[in-house]
Amino acid sequence: MGTIDFGALIANVIREWDGVEVLPHRFGGVEFRVGRREIGHVHVGGVADLLVSVRMRRDLVAAGRAMAHRTLPHSGWISFRLRSEHDVPAAVELFRLNYDRLTGATVKSPSAPVFPNATLLADRSVDDLPA
Image (cartoon, rainbow, N blue to C red; front, side, top):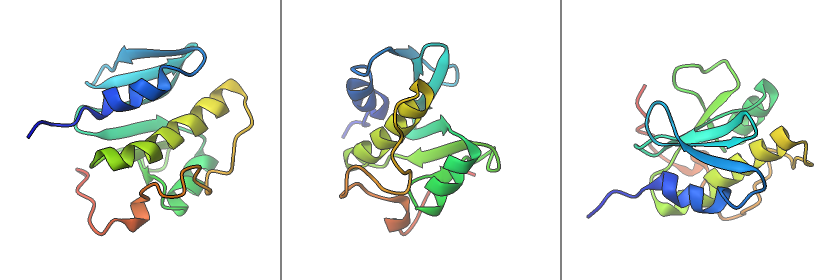
């Protein structure tokens, strides 16, 4: 059984957004940029990291849609662990929220998911994200 390339799955969606560039990430994986700003990146191991505003980070973590970043928990960085292809829509939603924020588009409330059946971190019983 092969490993799922979450970066490629997410890139297939995000590369279609206006002005998005898909690049290799400096720590491995794939990075998504709009203009000179990073929307976020996906590490080879299936962890998506995005830099959002501190307020958005607080709201997303409180809503169970993301975790505070493992090494920068009090910054605007958030993390989302992808465990299966079923987690991809929820990750894409996070990237879309950040894309909209960075491009000045109307941003939906970070506490209300666009995909109602997307897996939330709060629905998971164990999280094996490395410390």
